[in-house]
Length: 103
Image (tube, rainbow, N blue to C red; front, side, top):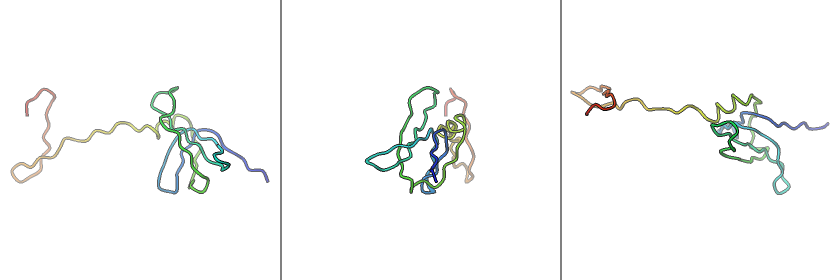
């Protein structure tokens, strides 16, 4: 029976604890087969922001997907924290300020 390799965009779970998305391919390093993951940057056509190699025993799951979904998974939107809670008269209130207002 021949083994079939996969090369393309995927979401990869490593040891069931870490999740990466990117373009995957097979590589051989020091005679050992490895999975190469090129994690894309935000801009299409830019070089990968990271390249990582994992041995087959580390791979928990590999889900083939589209380039668009892999890029979205690899570059989630920026998250902004809500306004800080401040203690006032024994209760927590959210203090809201517009830019330019003095505190």
